[in-house]
Image (cartoon, rainbow over all chains, first blue to last red; front, top):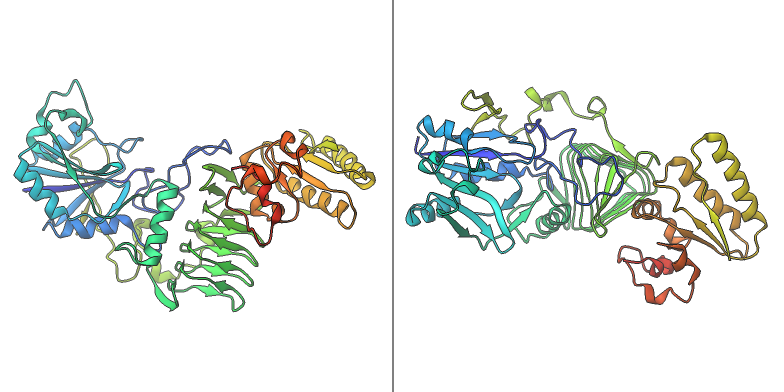
Amino acid sequence: MELGAFVVVPGGKDFTAIREVRPHDVATVEKPRPLYCSRMPIVGNDVLQSWMDRIRKLGVKSLWLTSGRPDGTVTRSELAGFAQQGVKRLLVIKLNSYAEMDLVDLVRFHCEKRNPVTEAQDARGLLGVSLLDHLALRAPEEKQEDPSAAIHSGRMAYQFSGYAKRILSANERQELVGDALTGACGMRPFGKQISEQVWVGEGVDLASSARFVGPTYIGERTVIRAGATIGPFASVERDCVVDCGTTIERSTVMPQTYLAPGLLIRDGVVDGGYLEHLGWGIVADLRPAGLGSRIPQRELRRPASCEVPHEVYAPTSKAPVWDFTSSSAATQAWLQVQL
Amino acid sequence: MNILPFPCGTSATLRRAQRKVLLSALRVSGSPVILDLSGCPTLNHEGIELVLECMAQVAGRDTQLLFVAGSRANQALLEVTRIPSLVPVFNSVEEALGYPESAPGNGTNGTQDQRANPSQKLWSA
């Protein structure tokens, strides 16, 4: 195999599903920058799917997925296991950004420069996309385990000037939501447009007295109750319930979130019972006050046809249910996905 | 100006007693009252309910009620429940004591509804 593709999904062991994910370590109520799982949908889109589409254009037939270590990295020795299986060049994508990157151009750049390691970066720094030659993985083990940090001398930066956002940051995530809603990037809301700049997913239940101010997005099977106001620049993802009279502006509500009646959610990201204020960078626990909570899996309005094996996230009935096969090539769990 | 601590005792009995004292004080107070939530790390449903009761106690009277959130988490919860649109909320007792003179200079956090809530100027960024 000439080129192997590897995607590291930070944010927990259960990286094949996008349920039961919440900001980490929120035992304290004021903690800056919680880490969101990169599998959380953005206006109904799965960022992993967008990277898979780009990888497919390279002619690669499958990729390997892992959650990596707790800090979201993989070790050089793990990747070396794949190199020993005949992979000559490794494309490693840490799923911490959405970038409209032409991977064909990245590979061309890497081949032209003949460097062991090429790392994509934009004006704000590394994007988590690296290309490694198998020879780069043969460096001595003792000094550095991180595959990209191991080969300082041979590292080459691929300067990316296209659209990119870091999706683990609540602020950049919200910027991406705004850009997707206004057409400022390639991502489009996943659903049908019901009025100007208002998109809804399948199976939504919208009260007739609810107001929708575009640009805004309502995800699949979400319930918006009487008198609620959603938008502008709001994204309420799938399987949420927004109770009577609540207003959501310039905010994202993550999947499976219940919001109590009469609330004002502004400039925030709500994930289950937690609210991150985008301006202040703090996380407030809504649960003790009864203002918000995670909707249990069993209470979802999911039709039987939407059930997928192994809780693999499939955004639509048209999307393929990925064929996961575990690997023994490394000590960490790697799952193979057919593209 | 009276400064009253917000009840946040560890036992339910203590909180009930503190609540009674607080509501009685609000009932008879003729001067502005600062309700200081600094002792409460985060508001639960009892706390939100009591905040609303305090507002009801002074409603329709000349008594000015001011809240000191004490923490960003409390500020966020008060904002979510739309309380700053009805009662001015401050970061600290010092800021509240400066009210209304301090109001224009404090800046805004830019997250309040300016049309509905003139008191949003009282929030510090």
